[in-house]
Image (tube, rainbow, N blue to C red; front, top):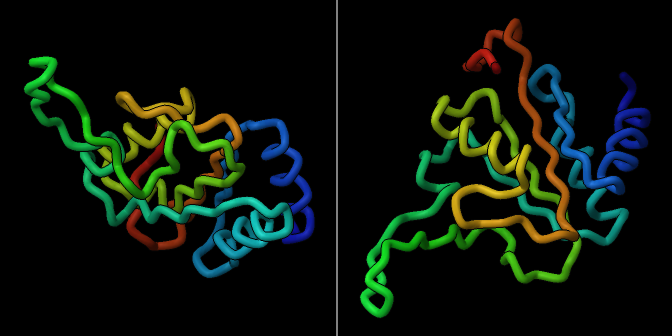
Length: 143
């Protein structure tokens, strides 16, 4: 697919709040295309390299709340705030290079727009990207 066709297709899917996965060889500009779309549409852009994250990074860290005597999750500061009224793209790069436990959290975020107690704001879209298995990179087979 040509970059211009990818841009048009991804833009339309973002408008409909449908998650997108871009699969291609390393270095073809997957992240640049998504960043350009965010810039053109005046949207915020958060780029997460999932291969660098631990499973608790997406879900957050549990801690004890002494006022309620309950365990609660500290939500990651790098994700958009749940009450955020802005529009943006959460870009999950290298999703199939991430360890399977990180992928599981990412899939929950992609499919349900939430992970643990965190919920992605309504104005935000999710775009994921990864390399192909035959590109000789470190990738895990996706379910």
